[in-house]
Image 1 (cartoon, one colour):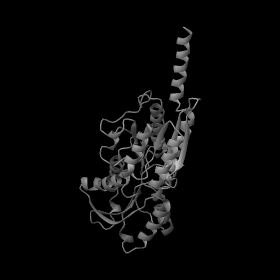
Image 2 (cartoon, one colour):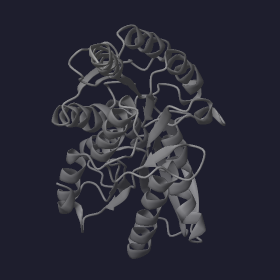
Image 3 (spheres, one colour):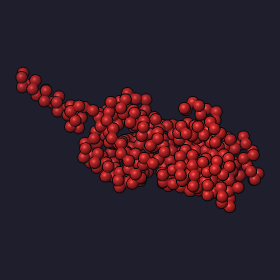
Image 4 (cartoon, helix red, strand yellow):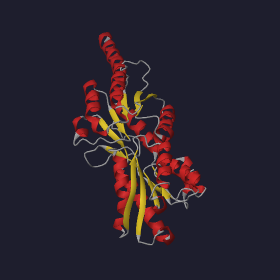
Length: 336
């Protein structure tokens, strides 16, 4: 009897240590990165909520800055593995490099939650049974932005300054190759052509940092260019670049229709002040919360959506997708 009791105690202790990956307090530790702290949305919306929600859930999270370098991220993941974190929450620098991160996690047998930047390699999410993705449907933001612009264009005939029935636009694009940047660029303009409205692209410039300074510099240059007086619409892949474009227009004494994506608090202020015509809520709060919820469940060896309202999509991407929402002068107060 004594031997049996002793054996039970040993097994219970071993189980508790195994759950905590060697930590005797049982606290889940998440090794996490942000691809670049210079990104307005990632650093201003997702990172604070990751920290706040992890604390509310009683888990530890170590967030590092990959500074826009995939090689640096690879090294950071190696360090997290050496530290024996319970789960990885990774914001890829290069969506095409997902397989390398997944292989590292698989080799170490550590669950992995990719978030905000989706892997672009075919089938890579099926290569490991402990990897999932949290993000959005990239095309949806472009579709919603486009629908807003089309509705407003039809309601404001004076926006067609030269009366040619076409939209002469400039585009501030985010990181080339980023699924969100590519989808927003395509589908925002496609909404016009789908509605039977002609378009003419006067200029398009891309910034891997999605930065406010870039938006300011490019918009200022466009306004003084040979086609400056022909611009009828400014389309921005994110709020950050939109803020820069608004600053440039104010400095030049110009007000053009302008739309962006993210619905950061500053964007709501610009809408309130009549300086921004619309944005699209990129729900960083719920992306962060879903990432933490899935990470905790994965670390505990549970179904990743157990006890939550999150749903995994039915495709091969193993993803929780947080919906986008249109934010307009009519409803912006709801998002304060």
